[in-house]
Length: 279
Image 1 (cartoon, rainbow, N blue to C red):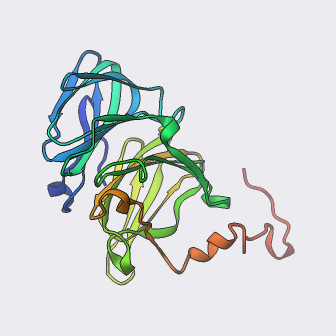
Image 2: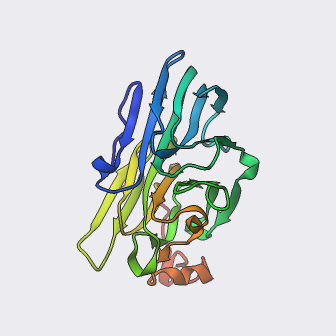
């Protein structure tokens, strides 16, 4: 997991070299008014997602406004940049955005995806009731990149039943990051990656602005009882184009809950015992 660095510039940076994987890079950039950030897309497709504030992206001769009140207030406009382009983002006041990429051949145009194009769904139930927004997933066009946003009310789980997409059990191979924002910012979330057939098992305490990496394994995330949780996923791997629609492999010990989110829930107090409620 990467802790958010304070100050301006790159608060978080993930490269294939630092993560020990092949495809995905990711960064969180924080700018002051009238400061800028620039990079070349090179042999990558690149996607910019505003988090909060306002700025302008310059891609060649194109000028594109980027703005967002906040991740808990509205869906984003998502800027897709093909390979071989120069990107400069200049802030109009404090501006935070993410930028990430993956290897691409080119052929898709520079494009801004609008919130009205994005499929939004409510998933799960009970203690795993959340909103998932497909801000750049098939059929929205990209080569390798896939992006989601998730909103989970306080005390609820996301990614349940646990799933994996590391090639295990025929799942697609995808590398992934979770970028967290929390409300209030003093709260925390927990994220776990694991596989029982290996000794791989890690649990991360994620605070506001932190980024969890998913290099392999099953994974799930939960917000503490006093915290609303937002996360942004960038994924990239072997699937290309429409193959990006392939789903993950769900942990067979836990998929039963999909048939009834309240099934087997305990009723309190148990065994007829009268209890005092602790404040």
